[in-house]
Length: 333
Image (spheres, helix red, strand yellow):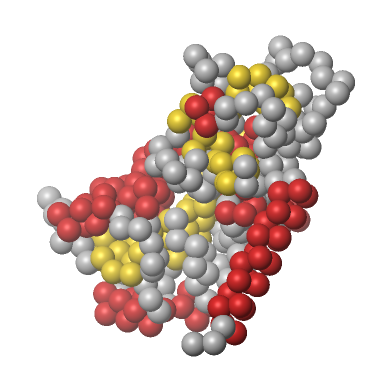
């Protein structure tokens, strides 16, 4: 019996999500080239897997690299996973492209899909594998699976579950696409989009409802920059927190004010716009790992967040520094 040849594919991927894509494809296809995003932290697991199987791996600095590989290797498909560069139509015309997108398309097209799903209070997330058309995340659907979002789920946990589905399904889905499966079209009337997020979007507004702040914290856990506040003018990332369901009713309320603290158990209670959020662990600028909130926040008189007085002090300090520099510049030699 003649052994069936595995189809050749190129993979555009990075990070843990890209690694699970590679493992899935390697089981069903022959990966002839991997391109990573430029200027990213070293992807040890991805590179190690590729090196052990003699798969070339490089950073995609310019699209000419991809165009050359497609022309030379003539792959049956180019697969994209955790690679947020938009591929222009003239490149898409060269080959079949398949993309992995962590949402239930056509909902949450665009960026930061899993983060937005938690932050927006969705009860369901999912994975879509689709053909790539020039329209952003608009290609025919080859595979979809939904997963529930629980009240305590973090973006870290959701990525782990979605990565596991990708590893189980991607290789087989790509092979079906290569052998002619065209999938089903999306209903563009139901399309919705998420914009890109930057680290500064994670600042906590303690005037918001407790559940809103809790979702922001859970939606920005590692590897994302984290939801943050300020203490004494310094940034403080909230690593782990939970709404207090048995909190006293505060009719005198200053959002951000610390109202409870346990040095023994390490937690700190902070007022929000409508309740109390218990902080369990935080990450301060001087620490590499999260530590107990009570070890950093030492007083129930403290208030989290930047006040107008804090900002005024910063402005005055900057003005004083500029004045000192001007004096040094004008001083005779």
